Length: 277
Image (cartoon, rainbow, N blue to C red; front, side, top):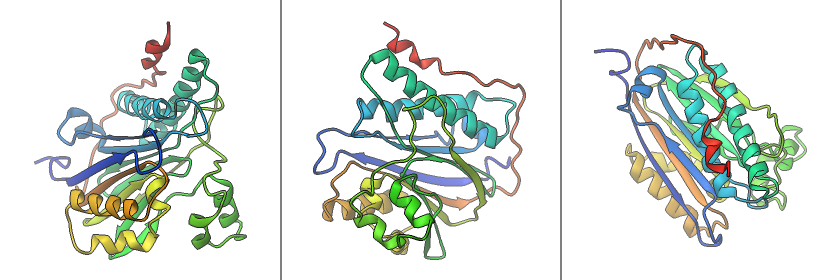
């Protein structure tokens, strides 16, 4: 049995328009745990929230994730941090170029992606979607919100518990698409068996407190059940945005994982051909 085969990870994803919005501008993307890419680069997950104030938010979010995953899987020869950097840059460029080709004004989206390799969790992040780690019945938000309100929290001007009710909570300072270059947050943290990772757009986390994510994990180790309970709670609390979530249970992690990087290849997006008309 190889190290990859000894890994046991289960996941669940859900996205919904919600009660208020007319369309769903969120997007989610999950690896296939049984395909060759996962065996080579580890488990990869991503979530994105298209900007409602810009044109084609749904296209922006899905295009960003498609480009990121394509780039990540084809970036042979690069280490994981480099894959995140070039993947997010390519995702940013693809959204920017799509807006130019469609002549539709600016397009924008958040993106939050994670890659699990052995006992390491790598994170790439832009915007205000969030990644949470649930461990020992405690919830930790791993990402910073790239918003005006998030900056106030980091400067200790605003208390974290005030973020969800602040009038300017959704005003982004950074997202993919509006400009040619982006500076993402990319980092790694150690993870362990029985950890739970939750990726969420702000339509979910804005109405659910951080500690409540941990409370909901106490009664189940089934990602589908947990994901459904979280979304149902967000709906009950009348979230005014699209609702999207990815739940990942780390049941058993490999002790040692060797990732093969046989050839260096950092492709630019090639999926933009659909807009070249």
